[in-house]
Length: 602
Picture (cartoon, rainbow, N blue to C red):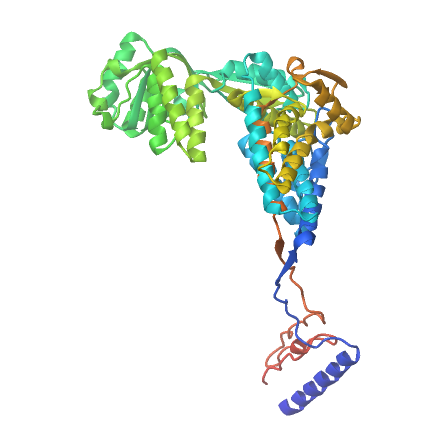
């Protein structure tokens, strides 16, 4: 019986095979082809790069200036996002064509780097990259040496950035800070004023954070003093049942680097505070077992005012935070490294604060009794560490510590009638905050593209320099033209002829420029239309760096997409049979390998 069944199967397979061949279908088992790489050379390579650069720049440029438009970004989850932030638009752009996508990715890297370093000016950096690369492509296509063109561009950018720094004016006063923030927020005065108020309250060293609000209006909350994200160890320390917080005034502060586990070690200090009827705040790595039980019992039965809090941070960072608190409160940190032991400590190690508020999640120490000179010295020490460190994590922690000591913390809650509106306005607040910090750091220059136009005037003598060849002079012309681009596009977005405005600004001289918001020529510094010099400088340097690299490109190597072989789809495997019978073969029209489902033995 087995031989008869086997013969029938072979005849069926042969018949199906002949039908498949007659229909022109492949009988080779399907498999994915190994993908290779493709290379494009010369003018073709640069042309494809330019297509990607152009498409990304066209999407980003519409956001430039006070009359710039918004861009809607589709998201894989949630509602679409509406924004006027250049880098947010650039990050979302990805092309299917790999050659074109290379150009877009390179420009996106410029926007990202400018955003990381300066925090704003990403739209300007993108359009500067496009302008330099476009003109560079034309020069190379006309037969000029790309390396000489690149040298001319780099030399010109160096001269322009040096001139920008000479033009810079130091930022002083709340009004100037508000103007910088307003310009960065696309002319929204409310944003600028709120940021200026926040910076005035927490100083330039303070921390300003931007959060989504829950109301229709923007809100500003400022915390003066030292705030850290550790709350009470036990809810038994709560003094206000309604707010679930522990609040004391004129409290003593005990700072311990290690863990407190024995109650007798702190009994002498606790007894002193009880006699003086002073509240006690204990900040240590941890308070556990016998010691914690002793504090709680004395609080509940003896009416002693006490609260225990874990010290913030980990390792060396925790030790540094405790040392900061010691300087702020005038306390002596109890640490074995300093030869101090808790059981030997007396009341002289205690610091003082005017007020302390401890919630479940955080603690605020207000008006510490520390010496102002000691606090200033500590701040200078932290600033020195900030300049020396290369680690982003370390920088972040040092900035937090500096803010807690020198200034404070301000939280801006962005309001709006919908989630989409809050998201769009939050982008503006973040840009404005970054621009403000950059302005305080390096100073300001006239805005509206005027600074680049004025700074580019230093390039005129280079055109008469006999030491430079014609190709290098072409590089100088490319930078001159690129410096006109921001002013040109701001005017275009405002609905007027860009070339006419650029010419008017050139003729006006000084700090005069075009106010796109009111459509008139004004003194940009007096009108408060100003840019941080760091934003303009970093944008031009990053744009020139990437654009010149693309201009000297002579070949592009890209991964080819995977190709699958044509032919019938793989057949279904044999269906499980009963008893000794194997599965039936794949049905007609399927390839040979799948049709030959074997018979099980009987």
